[in-house]
Length: 309
Picture 1: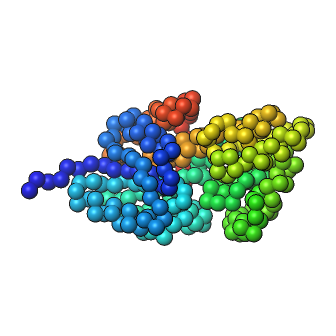
Picture 2: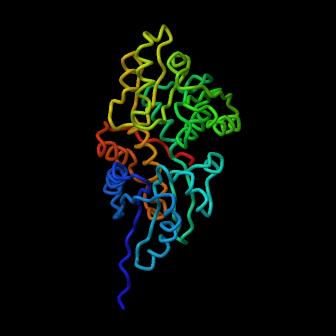
């Protein structure tokens, strides 16, 4: 019997997933790296997640060696319990967006969303030379947890989480305090008046969910002498979002979730390809990052050094 043909696989899991730009990003990276890695989107619900993960090992028998998985909603928390090991960041946050499969079939969980948020805010003009201040966070899900970790990494003093139901954000307060951050939870209706007081704002709300907040923000008038801080709106379809338009209309700098998607994906590519790049020269990450940015319509971006995940 002929030996199975060896091929490298990777992919993104979520539900729904048809809208994902991850295949474009990763395909662009692997072309520059000269690696033949088959990266596809897979629509997987939480109920079918364990079966999909178990199948990664079964696929090896046919020559399909899985390098890793990108993980999006609603699987970021359920996937954690299926890992053989997780990074300290994932252990603290309780959510991941990246799974790396070792040569021995072991699975390790990582979170590169934090890196994506930090670098996106830099693209929006966040000044890392200053310290202190607070971050405003709209929404209380898994991406909000990553934003809390980003606030700590940026040297901020505290965060305020704005949600519809404050009772559902208790866990985020606990997480923030574990990072040594002051924390408070408020309603979304409180955000427009509070916006100028932050050093950075991250909206983790789904597309259009921030539209009522955006309308209130636009009606609030000038931001005063302090102006508005940099905003990362994790939503990117449609773009500009109502929130982004209202923010820009009041003179604030905004970046879309495409920036976050780019930078978290660059870190995923580093992690996925580490074992197939062993013994080779360090890649030209500037070229990789530029190709990935171009694949989703962003201007060329400077590469960032490897980050903890």
